[in-house]
Image (tube, rainbow, N blue to C red; front, side, top):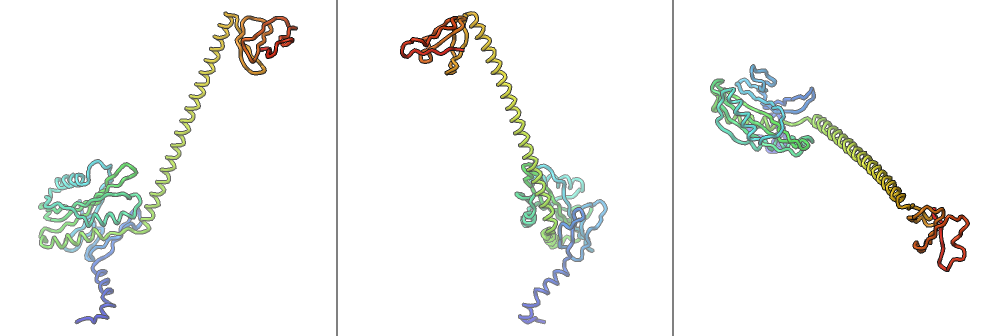
Length: 318
């Protein structure tokens, strides 16, 4: 039966949404009891399953198709993403006796992950790459695909590598349907969305971390400045004390030398000028305009400024 054009225009989007709702279910993941992300999984899958000796098993359908997911512990960035993944795969296949039949990149998953993580402040500046490995496990009689998404985040100057793992495994007897099942699995990996409240919470935590870090840095800088200032003050005091000791030593030495040569240091109180005076006369006068003109006497009644020639003027030194 054909649907008239106008009716289809009105009803087809609704019918499509209903069909998608029937085909997929939304699975919610939690982080510390809080909704963190949502994933679209085919409706015939049962999720949060428990499979012995397979902690990564996530969802399974009646045909034996199993979706896997997990995350490796973050580690300092010391080797490139491709080498990191190769090391993980070599170790895993050696343990499981699986054989890798194909290696390739999955740029559409990389793009999805970058777009998804762009909402998270702590992942700003992240670089990412996705690597897929088709494998066959003859012992378990399964075939499948493993995808490793490697993200390298700046982490405030100490780069960290973060690895997320996704996989699909099917009975080897369903080999003819493998491509279709793998394509559906890739769609599942690209279906994830963060919960907005979860994103807000992570960003708030990261902002608090940055604020605390900046506060600690400011406090550290202030302590360093204070330590530097204290050291400078101590150095200035030590230098001043050294100068005072040298000056005192110089004065003592000068006084000693002057005593040998019968010289004294005297000052004109009117001008502040200092003079070196020989001998030990009680009264010593000097012409402030011509220091070569001086008079020494022990007579307290003598006044050199009486009946002096023009331009002669004597000040008493102290």
